[in-house]
Length: 228
Image 1 (cartoon, one colour):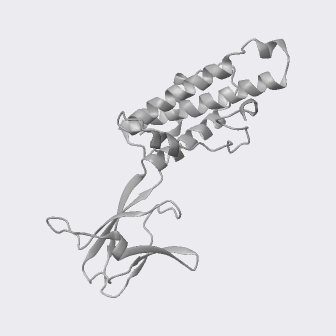
Image 2 (cartoon, one colour):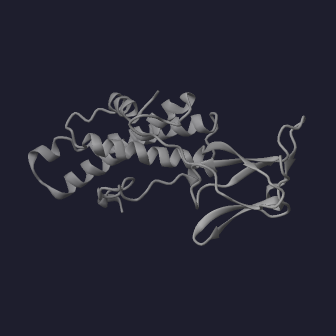
Image 3 (cartoon, helix red, strand yellow):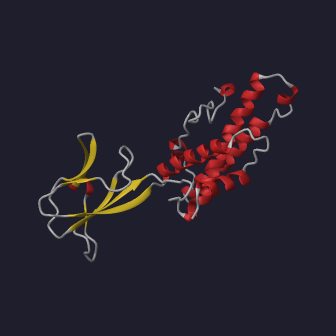
């Protein structure tokens, strides 16, 4: 099973950080940023069964539900019908905060005793040191997105280095920032082409959103101070 370490190895192959400007932990943070964005583009689709008793309408949210991210996509009731019987989500189910805890509420009925409701819902993907929920077909896209983020970070690093110091070492690579910016664009294009099946639309580019600053405090991922 693919793990965070596997993605890290692939990232290092794709983008060489020969000067070790970033630690492995920082690169793992970059991978997690990529997973967050991928989750917005292609969230994980899961399903859960709710057993009816004829009177209960309020249930605990299903496993992995993330308040503020997860939504119900489809609702099947009763289960086991051929063809499958889907109800309109907007008219039959909602998620509310009850004592600051999210709850699933079947608003139009109480599921009958002996019958089940199946909800299809989305959650973020996860990548950690033992597992990944990224589909195998999309793993290369995660590496490309991580590479884009990493190149953008390297571009910002070199831009700030050139801005803040006059040492000979700093001016040896005056084009490094631009080189990594261009590589970032290339990797991002490859990611978007995969996610959109080859069609990179303006709307997709418009909604794509990097965080302005890494969680560990490095300045601006997409723009160095020189370019603000």
